[in-house]
Length: 217
Image (tube, rainbow, N blue to C red; front, side):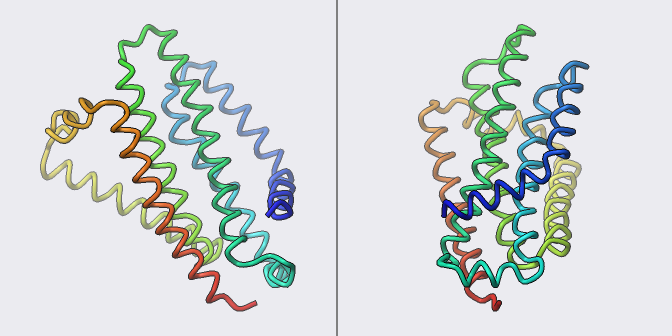
């Protein structure tokens, strides 16, 4: 496991120019006053895409076959990808949430602790969902086809949400569901989010492991 982490971190290090450019771009956006919530939705997904590039490198020049010839099980390989992706995705999200919180407080925001928690949990659920989709799709279809499948899924979801809003013309913030969720105690919200995380990741990991077991190298 440790060897896989070191390998992937060195692969990611090779993309340092991209990461430095990304950091500078976000710094410029912060200085120019871009809404900090933008970063919570953007940074984690970019970092997850960076971690997924390690799978692409592993599949080049039959490198995966070499890895599986080492004392590394397919289960360990899958587990390491989830831990690596969670470290970058959730870590990036946590940093951007802190930036969002600080900027909102500096601007005298009227958001309550419950509102901040709801924002935190909402974005984090999407990060975990994206991670749970990316890894099995990347393992199954590879880099190019995987991106196409992933984009098709997300554009399909966006299109569905848009059509539902157009047809139903309902303000989600005024629905009974939203009002009920926002009134729940923080402990219950956190427990619900944790259950969702476990379900997403468990199903995703089972699918990913099934894909890996069927691969021939």
